[in-house]
Amino acid sequence: MKKLLAAAATILGIATLAPQEAAAQEIQLTGPLAGAPSVRKMRLYRQGRFEIAPGVAYTLLSEYERTLFVNARLQYNIFDWLGVGLFGGYGVASVSTDLTDQIDANAPRNSRTAANVPGGAPGRGLFNEQTGKMTYLINPQVTFSPFRGKLAIFQKLFVDTDLYFHGGVAVVGVKERVDCGDTNIPGQPLCTAPASFTQGSRTAIAPSFGLGLTLYTSGLVSVNLEYRAFPFSWNRGGFDSRGGPPDASFPDNKINSEDRTFKFNQMVGLNIGFSLPAKPTISD
Image 1: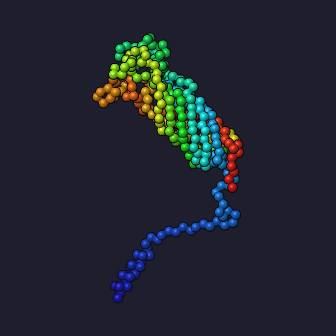
Image 2: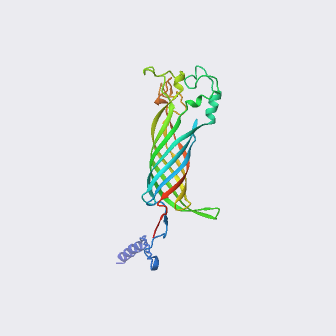
Image 3: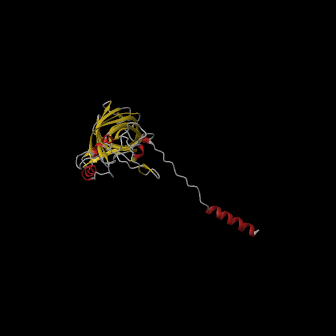
């Protein structure tokens, strides 16, 4: 009997020491805060409004040419955090990089470089005629705005601000060196001929994504800083660099789609936005 009582006491002690399920006490709000939203009288700068935002943008980290775009964004914001729109830009100027200038001024012109560098004396400014350039960009996109708040400028001026992300499909107009060197195609020039150093146009399709910061200076006007990436493959230098044996990674004396290489194209831009209706909705 004593042994039975000792065993029962041991089991009871173990059960007492076993971890117990924790339970948090629910906090019940009473008074005027019961059922109230977390923020009241908030300006909904995006919800239910159309926006048109003209601006300028400039490509980054391009080896041979950088492009200045004039652009505009047209957008309708379904909610304060979700919008759909169209971004479009036109390349008004291409600026040669220092690398382009150095190649043009210093690259030797001989039989070994004849397919990659135009003939003539160095310094004649011919190399940039074959380098790839962007001519336009059309970009349907979706905008997601999860974060908003106020930005303090010198602790004196406070501006309503939101951070947003965008994604879509970019249609990019590209100018590249024309195809050359394929003797099986009638009329195609050799890659050493002067006619091969001209450019042709094509359209590239690429994913597009990025983020931006909007500063609401008033109910009607906003200032927008934006970063955009749209990676795709293209022949930026106009060089014969691929297509040959043993694994298509060596020159083959032809310029064609094999010579296009992947590039993480990117740009930054500044836009001024105008929203309609002119006054944002105020939440309850």
